[in-house]
Image 1 (cartoon, rainbow, N blue to C red):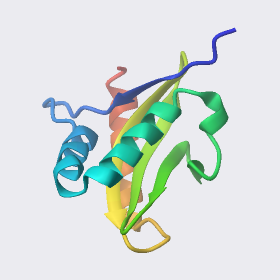
Image 2 (image 1 turned 45 degrees about the vertical axis):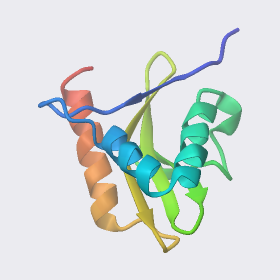
Image 3 (image 1 turned 90 degrees about the horizontal axis):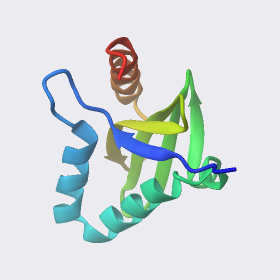
Image 4 (image 1 turned 135 degrees about the vertical axis):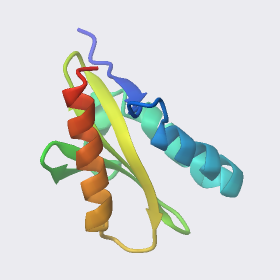
Length: 118
């Protein structure tokens, strides 16, 4: 039985893709962290990685992909039917906690994605 997931990026109603834009900037500013986060997103295709230390539940259906480097890089995502993962938001910060504003952004995008029935 195939337990492979697909990872896709959230797109806004006007077609922008916040996580892809974040990744493009990261590729330029910090190629090593970019490579690690990109590899982490690829690992999410395998169910074995849907737990710590790579991934962690944030509650409310949201999860985070974690990469610890000079700055902590996090990609927030959720599951949808048919073994799909949608990455909705990405941040870099020094702290261990994700700011409430960023959780709010991720939840808003998750609801938006669900409402538009992608």
